[in-house]
Image (cartoon, rainbow, N blue to C red; front, side):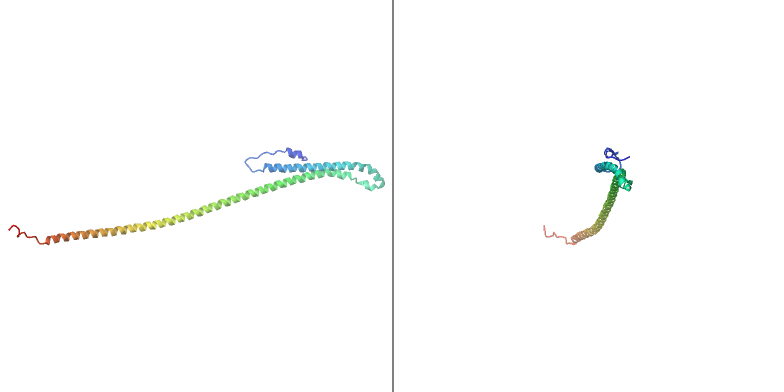
Length: 205
C-alpha cells in the first residue's frame, strides 16, 4: 500500500507509560517535515505525468510519418519508458523517505541510549567519589579524636600522679608538724617540773 501525506497526517501513536519514549513535539515536527516532502514528491510526480501525457499525443501523431521517413526511428517510442518510469520514481522517493525516517529514528534512539548510559555512569562515578570523600573525612576525624583522647588520657595520668605525690608530701608535712608540736609540748612540761619553787619565808614574819 502506497504511503500518502494524509496517511502521515492522520497517523496517531499510542502513548507509552512506565518506559522511555521520545519527545512528542520532536516527533510531530519530524512528521510535518515528512508530510511536506511527500506532498512535494506527489506534486512533482503529477507534473511529470502531465508532461508525459502532453508529449505522448504529438509523438503518437507523428509516428506514421516517422515510420515512412525512417522506419528504425519508430522502433522504441519515447512515451512508453517515461510513462513506466513515473510510478517507479514515486515508489523510490517514498522508499528513500521512509529509509531516511527510519535512519533518523535509529540515530535518535542510539543517541538517547548513549546519553542515558553516560548519565548513569556519571551518576555512579559521582556517588563513588562522594562516598570515598566521606569515608576519608570520617577516617581523618576518627584519627584526630583518637589523638585528642590519647592526649587527654596522658594529662589525666599526669594529674593523678601529681595528686598522689601532693597528698604524700602534704601528709608528711602535717605529720612532721604534729611531731614537732608534740616534742615542743613535752619539753615545756619537763622544764616546768624542774624549775625552783618560790620561797614564802620572808612574808608574815
